[in-house]
Amino acid sequence: MPCTCGNWRRWIRPLVVFLYILLLLVVLPFCIWELQKSEVGTHNKAWFIAGIFVFMTIPISLWGILQHLVHYTQPELQKPIIRILWMVPIYSLDSWIALKYPGIAIYVDTCRECYEAYVIYNFMIFLLNYLSNQYPSLVLMLEVKEQQRHLPPLCCCPPWPMGEVLLFRCKLGVLQYTVVRPFTTVIALICQLCGVYDEGNFSSKNAWTYLVIVNNLSQLFAMYCLVLFYKALREELNPIRPVGKFLCVKLVVFVSFWQAAFIAFLVKVGVISDSHTWDWDSVEAVATGLQDFIICVEMFLAAIAHHYSFTYKPYIQEAEEGSCFDSFLAMWDISDIRADISEQVRNVGRTVLGRPRKMYFGEEQEHNEHTSLLSGGTQEPVTDASSMPPSPTGRYKGFGQTTITPHSLSAPAGLSSAMQEEDDNPPTSLPQDTKNLPNPDNGTIL
Image (cartoon, rainbow, N blue to C red; front, side, top):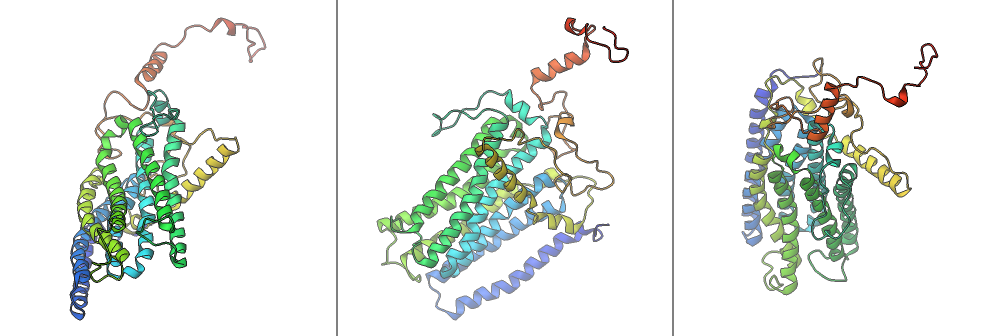
């Protein structure tokens, strides 16, 4: 029997608030002591101001994460959301530490860069999980849609066939960034140890320039696949308002990347030069510190945007049962990511070998936390997508709370109406060519 800790939903939130206030009482004197023990220069002032924004940002993000854990009723949607919400505190804390200790910036920034790719992938998973649950016949529905052509600058390329191919390639396009980004980050660490990285300096003689180009191309293609996916399924995704969510993810990732490139450009043209390094050791350290300071400020705005875009309110249900530990542990479970990467690698391998797999989507899923953490005696096992009835449409209020309307979007209107007519008017006679078939009961000819 799971440990429910009594009525834990009532005391978990006050407990977190108390622990955070206790943390502030410890950290704030430390920050003041750091300012007093040394001369208050530009570096320390920037670090202290950034810390104010960091400790205003973290409560907003943690409150949203905590509310999703308290109302963890739809794991297949809320797990990706929680992973996305963690981006803001990770970015802000990482930048604040790197701002204070520039010497270890390259190492702590690797966490931020890897998590950036992880967030983009989880946003794609969030969209796919929603569509898979709301529209079991998603592939068939997509196949009869109008062909989605490529967007600029790839508008001259042949379009991807609608249906399973489009879904697979869009997902693979996003997944490649989750592989490329950690790989280039490891290369950056090796180059830093070898003294050839030279971050923030555009030059053909260092590794940073080439890694920036590779990361930028990979990131742009991942974002392009997300946009193409949204264009093809805009109407089906409208109930969850994906535009605001997409902008929250895209702006954080793109703004942090391009402002780093812009600051490096200012260093290259001499706007940020060795004559004004303030308390930093070099002009490159000034560029890195400026980037970290700006991120600390921006994450406060991003936390507010995430709070409203990835709200927990659609997932509140009247009867909520579950363990206070199960929802917390499920947040750290990455078995779905590991299985997904393995599956995509196998699919790519089969395609390269000329033996592509026929079904990438709509396969029977094993009964795990994707079905529901609340699975108990009241929950039935998840059935295969092909045997599930069409999902009703209406305003999205969370699974089990969708307002039912007469028509279903899980299959095209023409197709569903034709099937209905066949059910209403069954054939009264056998076709001509079946009248001469042998009767299996007595061996006679019909």
